[in-house]
Image (cartoon, rainbow, N blue to C red; front, side, top):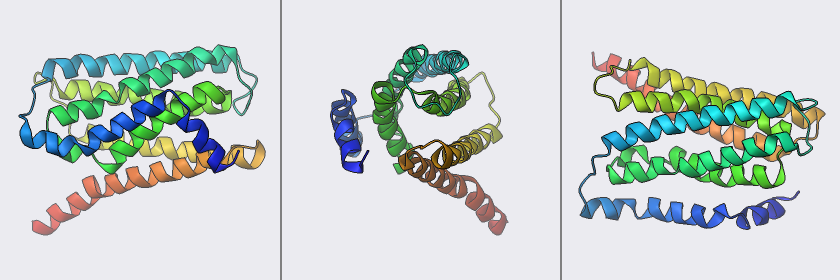
Length: 233
């Protein structure tokens, strides 16, 4: 499949109009925040984050069930046992766009980074593409891993909204490290698939881009900040 053919298939997805609306929201976020006051969404965020965590857990379980009934993890043929898992995963990515909506309503401009927007927007399209065109065990492995990571990610977000719970500051850094590790594992897996099972090169490119963006965030959020504090002391 050429890049042009791939993009054309993405444009035809039912998620594509949502993708355009999402990007429009991001563009108009700053003007909106200039004319409005921050909205208190404490209770709503608590429920939302726990719901996302539970949905990710259910999706991960569905993927593992489908993979159990597959011949091998590098298989590139559609599996009926995986259809539900792929659809659930897409619905999760659709729902997780609310992350950005809540940030806009709460005036959390610093959180709406290039990494955040690229990750949410791209996964919306790629998750539906996988469901519609490549519901394979080879893809399910990666999405099961991602779903597992999101279980813990949204639990952390939920606990962070609870004033009664003291969440160790180290957890946030550890979760970023887990996310980076996830993409490193994905790249290694895709390299094996590329050289031995005919995987598409686009998966490697996407994994490399995500690894770079998360590593860039990690450096400036934790490594560089720690170095700056030491210099000031």
